[in-house]
Length: 441
Image (cartoon, rainbow, N blue to C red; front, side):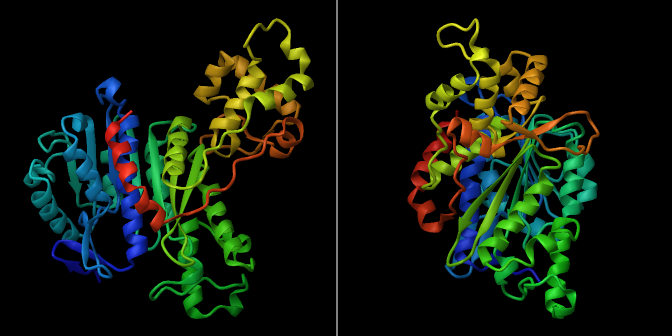
């Protein structure tokens, strides 16, 4: 049963809810300032933020007796406060609950009077709403509406507990019709530690994959996790593990592996609201620069250092091993194989690469030359083919970096895992975050 405080939806848990909302509120301006083209392009590229669980736009934090903006509220604040720069930014608010929709319209009318709230549920084709749309419809009804939306779009899944894998796949299939097609990004909120620590009425997952040892409540939790993952194979990967850290890592890795079906790059951003709690905001993209900027954003608001391996030292080792590639090069020129490899090391999340990566094609000089470079790198063990087929049955070979070989031959270590951001860290950095979002790109 939903509970409201005025127009705000009531949620407990000051640390998790408030921290998550503030992270999203900082990220939306950052994402838009890049994907819109920024100041140099007069913010002229079409963009869209699609909130698939819009709520009311406001959240009442019981523990603080305070009303804050939810993620939909932050999207509307960005749209309204940055006009006319945000003239080509669409905000699509999807909410199946009629009561939430009515409260959301009240919030919009009260907070952002420049948005014609009486028209936001009007005809989709009209722009009289200043590109703000409220869709009180089911997911299946919404998908045909947003399928052909032009420009870059970010979809935010923010469920109260978890999102069914079926829904993730439906939205992805609706927008990504060819091999790792760009222009669509997902943000998915994962209550990672809740699966193992429990919360409110939710019982933690059992510590054994043997169903005979499960309580009825544990069985219900496993079924929810089956829906999250889309199958049962995760059970053997997660449930037998002993420690909380191992189980959390295995759950996120298993979920990330599934998202890789649709997205070349999947970046889980961890944060620690309080105590042993661990949540993840998972960013998914098929565009290397999008994920690279997100990683930089996260490094900026945490104490996690940016990944900066020594290019000069690594290239010195590379030259000694592959002198045959240096023939004909002058001055600062570098072999295409090296440029392809180093770009993947520095800029590709998890060292993922394939011959369709636009940045690698640019480094190699052509798609054909990139294919030759990847064959050469695979032969020398620097990259490893992942095997298997892709969802679109396209003949594209996929690779990942072979870190043991890179460490041995070039003395290059992989990036350190992110350490989760705490609420204290975030609020110390809030002034920096707001100023960064206002600068644009």
